[in-house]
Image (cartoon, rainbow, N blue to C red; front, side):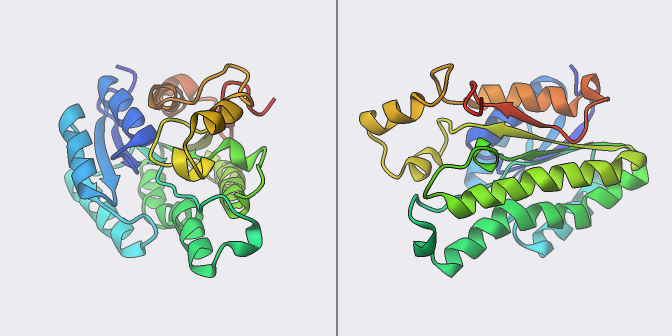
Length: 246
């Protein structure tokens, strides 16, 4: 019960890594808001793990403002925020990604963190405590060709994590990130372009431990970094990648 009575928000909590984080947090005693643009998926996960579902587009300020108001009224605080929601563009040369697709990737992967700082961080500062976890990617550390703007958005998230950590440390708020390698999530096919045994084998050959990241891997790492056990850890981008970035 490392997160007993903690109030947590997990964006993109309706599937994949987000669901793994929701599951682990609730097992450890947290009260979790499962925020996702797909309300049906959020409701399904919330029902499985005794959370609360909320439809939310993380790229829109209005949705963040509604969330902050709801959290203030319902709980009076936010102890943990996990910025997990993310998207990618299909693998292709950088110049072929159209402007609308670029804007959407940056809005969901980067602007969302800015919007969370405008709405949720003030509640943590007022309370003098809080833990923020940004789900970045190995792509932000060791980028691969043809995912250029996705790579860039995750590199931005890693730098933002460190900058936020430095600024918020005196206010009692810790900020960390985790860098997963690709996993069995709805984004896997988008990363690979095509899901075939040959492409999977090629991808797995770049991971020394020989497997994809799992939602359980992310849940375990997230739980540790957001718990009091990690009270001396801030500004870290922890690679949970089976050795991919070595």
